Length: 363
Ligand SMILES: O=C(O)CCC(=O)C(=O)O
Ligand SMILES: [Fe+2]
View 1: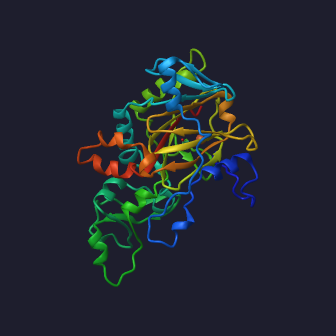
View 2: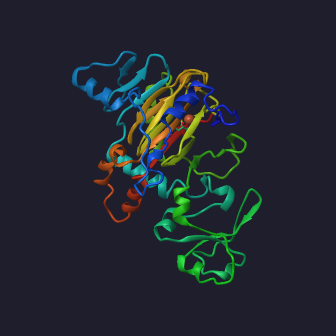
View 3: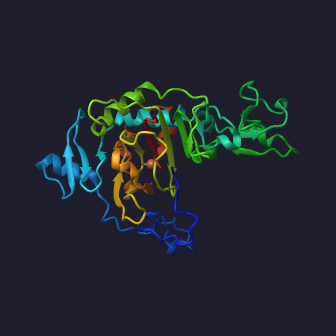
């Protein structure tokens, strides 16, 4: 999973890499030396499939572009599929605004909580309440002696991978008052921006590229299970029910990409990966079974759900771009729903970010 072409010095060697490069965020050099805000370089988006437009035309007069088919399931709208990518399904606007807000909140406040692991685990050990700490402008400090700081809680230092982690959140002003002592510290807000993934259910071990069933874990939350089962139905073998056992939550800030990869660590590829998009719009590349096959580019918007099952699971895919600039982020509708005091920090985060939750049956 998540192998990429990096390591070859020719970044344009495959059709997939060329497409990634085409859509990736680059800044316009013209503005480099001026005081003006950096502007993203223009990208030709004319070949990017837009399922939102396809849905609109389909609902108006039943028309569909060549190579796109529609089926219906137990959902409110149609499920689209592509003739030349069997096993791939696109459900535009599958999640209501309420559902989108709910999963944005959960992705920020609940999913990164231990025993779920995140990309920060390897350095800092398990981090509790990162989102709240960021909201309260706290700072994560490495401390030698617990008594050095007024700590948030009286928890013992955590141990992960055999290393002891003495990192704790403290008030911002406590750090600056520790004159003469050099402590490593990092603001919680920076850690939140650098949150790249969290894993739910059976934990994926990135270093071994496999599921480590011996790691402590909670079951996938039941509301997420129900949603995934409902969405998966269109791609499921007849008479079988999807069993959500693990999920990876990807967090994207501006400029972040997910390189071309296959998700090949699950036992039964006839079962779909159910992939939900939240927040800023992105470009998704769906390649073929070889990186040499030119990928199909499509927009992914907040609320869209993608299913990859059967043959589509053998297709390279990735996310070369998210759009955070005001014209194309298209998340203004979320602003009308994320209005209470607690939601404001979620809104601030999601204005410039994208979250993807992809749910898998492992066995
Ligand atoms: O972010 C996405 O839409 C795709 C995520 C993905 O492919 C993965 O996590 O395996
Ligand atoms: Fe993937």
